[in-house]
Amino acid sequence: MSILKCISPIDGSVYAERPVMGVEEAASAVARTRKAQKDWARRPLDERIALVRAGVARLHEMNDEVVPELAWMMGRPVRYGGEFGGVNERATYMAEIAARALAPIEIENSAQFERRIVREPHGVVFVVAPWNYPYMTAINTVAPALIAGNTVVLKHATQTLLVGERMARAFREAGLPEDVFINLFLNHKGSEALISAGSFNFINFTGSVGGGKAIERAAAGTFTGLGLELGGKDPGYVMEDADLDWAVDVLMDGAMFNAGQCCCGIERLYIARPLYDAFVEKAAAWVSSGLKLGNPLEQDTTIGPMANVRFAKEVRAQTQEAIASGARGLIDPKQFPADDGGAYLMPQVLVDVTHDMRVMRDESFGPVVGIMPIDSDEEALGLMNDCQFGLTASLWTNDAERAARIGAELETGTVFMNRADYLDPALCWTGCKATGRGGSLSEIGFHNLTRPKSYHLRKKSA
Image (tube, rainbow, N blue to C red; front, side, top):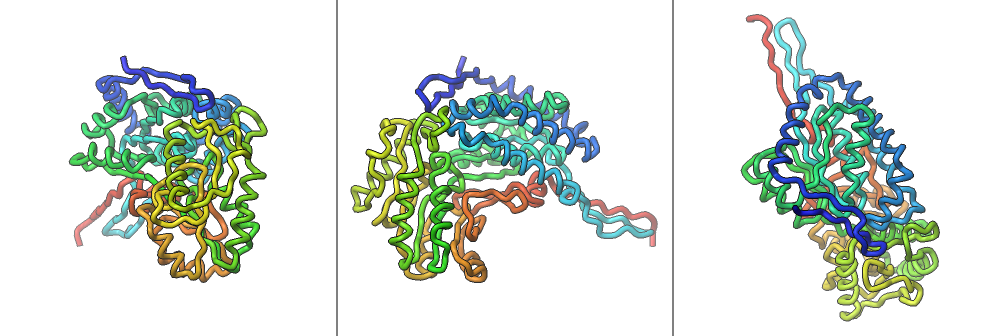
């Protein structure tokens, strides 16, 4: 029997393990969710919303268990209190807009005709969730999919093996009907077999570019709808009129929080030359004096280990390659003695970097950021767009018109001004290029989790 094992980054021990479900057994479970879907969709919208809210509330009641569990599974320090704030914000907003977002579009209601477009649930939605923000990324689709009348099958990354199990249990204990929301323990082969068989009506995947390609290949010919949020290499551009201290604080937090393991984390910075020296000095001080690398179960730890040794190995490789090519690291390794050459990785700020270096092109997904001086908006635009990814971009200026003008030329999913590393549930979370396709949250998120169905009812002859 094949076993899924979560290796804890804290000490390299096996923290949790579950047997891989066989394809036939998994297909039977999915068939049960399909059977349950019609009855679930027939329930009044208010009932579905109430049950989803109850599931989220039950999950919150588990938070004292969830927080250390997350630290053990993927290394986030317990001082940050888990993810319930974001989970609740997103689920609550989607519940509040559901009636409006799912309302029929009335074209005509006359003595002769009724013409309207309604939103129909897809059916069974497969959510493949990542380990870096395992609850928040999952709820982005789970909550609106259920509210819209779909049933949901959740498969979580092995690194956060217990999250899907806990989410499904919370919703079940809150009163969600049997088989409406289930969790499956699958390996890649099993997931691809179910997808290739057309088991699902919509698939939402958050993860690597390679994983997204694998899902596209598996779904080829099934005509299953896909939502894919893949890699990122998000830039920040600090203009000469920016509030320097504010920019340093937000951008460096965006680069280093969660050990840099954020889809929309800041990975490269372009600073107007008049502010460059001061920004670099303050950024290095922010890291050196503000971060403590260590055991995530200790309250004074601000940056824990990366989720897996192999993730840390890639960040080290990018950093070392850049330094060998002429970049300078501003952070002294002596300030972070907990760096063990394994999952515990010290943060680093690099200058004298160029776009010939992988650290400025490839996704790092770790606590390293490169900083370059810039002489014009045009130069900044060229560099920000010189990337295979497009998730978010952070612009720092007091001129909103300038930010909007630059934003119009950016190849990205979200343009921030004086903000970074934040997901606003009222706005569509989306990307372009190798970051993927589709969009979650907002009214558009509901539209992507449903399909349009038209009614043309002729009441009597003219």
